Structures are given as structure tokens and as C-alpha cells.
Image 1: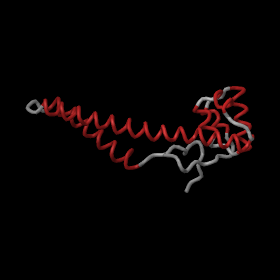
Image 2: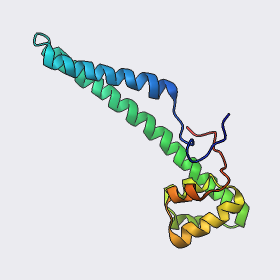
Image 3: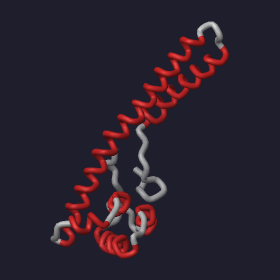
Image 4: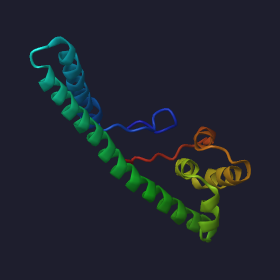
Length: 145
């Protein structure tokens, strides 16, 4: 497995991203094309396109909503646990000052850099993306959804 870093840390689910979604997008394109080229069954193709669009919309929204919601909760919980382990303090006050992108970015830093980047995020309010770019030794997250 490749070493994870800023350039390759995004994850794709091949059946969803490279098979199902392209197929549904193709069917949507076919339906729209047929609406303008098939005057006999135009109403049928309009209905077909509406149904395919709704399937596509629901597939994207439901999958993302549940997966990202759960992942975000776990990332926040991981931050709380890690903060407690490092500083032996509750993280409530600190967590209130950070936005989610900053909390999520900090999980890629090992403990020594975590402390430095957390302080920088609190004092300078650097973005999550800047935190990720500042990490010198990337701590891979291989368990993402």
C-alpha cells in the first residue's frame, strides 16, 4: 500500500464512483437525448429522465449524508480522545474554537506536530487545508469511508 499524504489522501468507492454513477449519468443523458430526438415516445422519455434523475439524486445524497455524518462524528470523537490523551484535559473549550475542517485536518498529524498545529490553528485560525499542507510527517487514515 502506498504511503498516504496530502496528494493521495482522498478515497473513492469504485462500484459507486466508477460504475453505478457513470451508468446512471449515461442513462440520464440518454433520456434527455431521446426527449429531443424521439417525438413518438417523448412523454415516456421525459418520465424516464425524471425517474433516473431522482434515482441519481437519492443515490448521491443518501450515501453521502449517512457516511459523512457518521465519519464526522467519529473524527470529532477521535479529536476529543486524542486531546485528552495528550493534554489530560477535556477538549470542550478548545473544540468550540475550531471548525470541523481544522479538527479533521489535525488527525493526519502525529502527536508532536498535533500540538504545534493545534496551537497555530487556535492562535492564527489557519484553515484545515493549511493544516494539512503544514504536516511534515503524514499520519495515514486508512479507515475512512
